[in-house]
Amino acid sequence: MTPGELPAVFAAGWALPKPDAFLDHFRPVIASDATFVQPMFPDAHGIAAIEDMFRRLFVLLPDVALTVVRTAVQEDAVYIESICTATLGRKPVEFAVCDRFTVTGGAIRTRRSFSDPLPVLLTGLRRPSSWPRLIRSRTS
Image 1 (cartoon, one colour):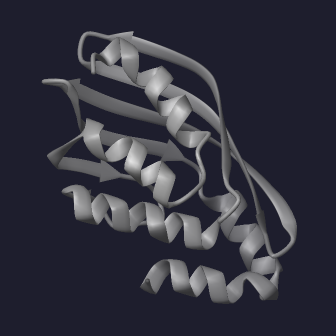
Image 2 (cartoon, one colour; image 1 turned 180 degrees about the vertical axis):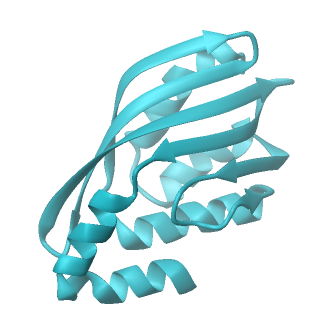
C-alpha cells in the first residue's frame, strides 16, 4: 500500500461491520510494530494492542460510523479528516477527527488521532444508561 492508497483503504474499512470485518480489513496494512495514539485510550503498540483499542472503542460506540471529509498526502504522511457519528445512551453524538498516518514499506507505521473527546464524554455523562458501556470501554 502506498500513502496515496491509504485514504481509499481507510474509507473502505470504516464502511465494514465492526469489529471483526473492520479488524480483518486493516490487519494486513498495519506494521507489526506500529503505534496508534488517540484520545481516551492508552497508546497502542503492536497489532494486538491496536486491535484491543478498537474493540474498546466499539464497546463504547458499537454503531459508530465515519465519513471522510478530506485527505492530504505528502511523502509518507497521510492526513484524513472525518466526521464520526454514533449513539450513546440512545442519544446521537457527532465529533470531528483528524488522523495523521505514516506509511512506509507498504504498511501503516504510526497513527495519531486528533479529536476532542468532550462531545462523547458529555453525552455519556448525561445518559446514565450509557455508564456501563463507558466503564467497559475503559476496562475491557
